[in-house]
Length: 144
Image (tube, rainbow, N blue to C red):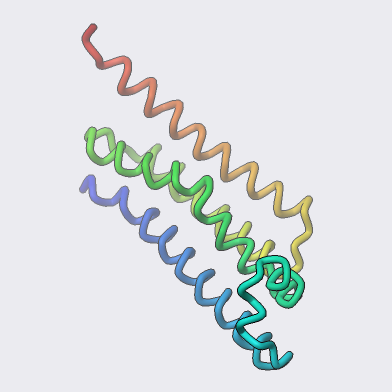
């Protein structure tokens, strides 16, 4: 197996972030145009929150994509750079990303917290599982 395959879920996560970024700007620009909002009014964060509240889902999700996924990106590079790529890591990485896709879709649309949280929790568990295995695998090979 080519170790670079571990980058496929990373590329998918980057693609998700790009799609949410585009979705955020399309919905925001449409809302600004339809409501004839003076863009300078958006300089104040409270006003922005009020004026763009109707389209806040993609924006809120974009912020979320720079929270837990940061640990995902680091995990992928640790796995690759230490040469411990395996089908287990690849599976867990794709689980994380797939669950994040669903989480993003929920947060950007109907935003039912029970549903969103379930996918957040499952994606987080897959990421924490990756990290526990990484730590055990690396620490067990250290010479003290």
